[in-house]
Image (cartoon, rainbow, N blue to C red):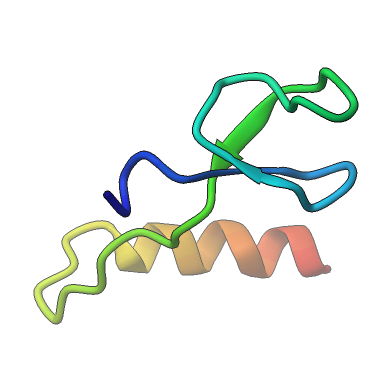
Length: 54
């Protein structure tokens, strides 16, 4: 069930549909990605995040 729950970024409404029932905006997946100790692309994500913070 965790892969089906979605959240609207505008009004923080939780729903199962692709569009928010309150504002009609798009929804995104409510859960973060799984954590893995053997993360092959973690180095690159950290590099991009560092560049964005500068």
